[in-house]
Image 1 (tube, each protein chain N blue to C red):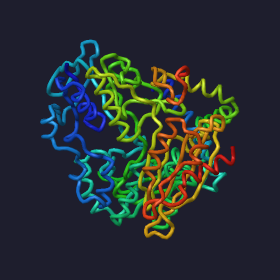
Image 2 (cartoon, rainbow over the protein chains, first blue to last red; image 1 turned 180 degrees about the horizontal axis):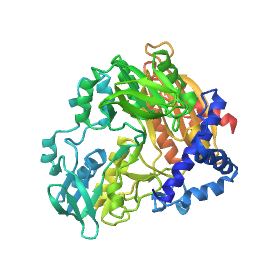
Image 3 (cartoon, each protein chain N blue to C red; image 1 turned 120 degrees about the vertical axis):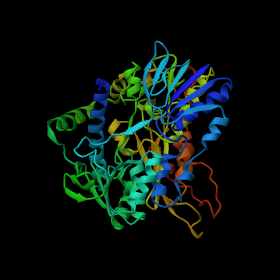
Image 4 (cartoon, helix red, strand yellow; image 1 turned 60 degrees about the vertical axis):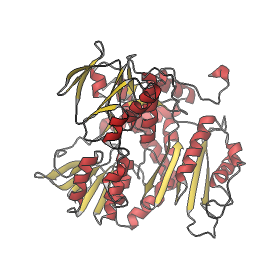
Length: 85
Length: 440
């Protein structure tokens, strides 16, 4: 597994569980299961809270810097003025 | 020109048809390891549930129709490797086969849990139609079944198994059905219906082993053992990109093949389409993999046109989606609250409970619409809906709203069809947009 896939898989899981906890509290739903093991705890109890306090601009730059299809010249949203596309 | 396509699903057949449409003189060869092409695997749960009378109804075309169209399909044929330098593939039983353009449409696999007993009989991955026919006969002998994780097909399989009178247990590590995609307030009616109708719901739990001698008798989970003769794997889709990876073609963070908007991979003569490829999301620009059959087909058409010498640019995706879950239809577009919160996107929501026809008209059903908008641009970034009808059309409409940047202010004052039999006076999308605008 490549580093970018490993990073995405773990961070996605941790951030989704964190978000599900927030949604569960908001809507009175079943909360996600507690973290299992050291690895899961690190991602959910250290990574997720740190990610949340980072400014959106920084998070966006970090997401865009990961290698993938999005960096292969895809069209910008069509509602942007021609100069910004 | 010779275009070789690996994979005979929606993407692969989309490639073949579009390539022929672009240039009828191209030689188009499709390799598939299965006995059939061009059927609707998404329809399989509905045959199991007896809503559709036979599997034959799921075929979109006959084998002869592909022959007549000039598409040379090699059935039950495995492609073992790709050599991009010599522009050849190694085909089981055929040897080396050359190509001018190669299109990878190798699809997806289930992310099967890495636990003991996955090789036992009685563990069903809903995908192949011929296998589904055999499983359908087997289901007549099944008294109790476990559905492992609630992916979209698994959601439909829960209802299908119930329709057959099979005792169903759903085991899912998430806290509610499809928790990585759907918000809890949207899916709650489905969860409550399942609970009322006797489905054993085990959320926040995971399967730790499949037990039995040669065939399944029990599923061991983190809460205990469940008796089951059948386990339906409903985990999420992972890209079937091993062939591409072995050939040195670049994969992305999803595990899918990296493509440009022409669906061209890191090799200029190799294209990829469908669930084996990753496509950027229109709102977040984060690449996604594992979308619907309609996405795979559209990507296949883009790849086919370009491989045959045309010039079509694919757009980032906004992912309108919808499905049947028990008595409900659920659907949406792009982000729900859970996913937007996970990513940390700024958003504001507006929610409305409405009806699908005039309140006095027979068959009127409830519908709930939740919209998400970026508070800075006031543009729609997502929606989620649940109702008795009219979800698909609204999801398609909202997909275009998100793609074209229509603001929630415009949505709040949208015109809508009013006709007692097909639409209510107040459109729920407009009502949700009005609620959202009031918060901005």
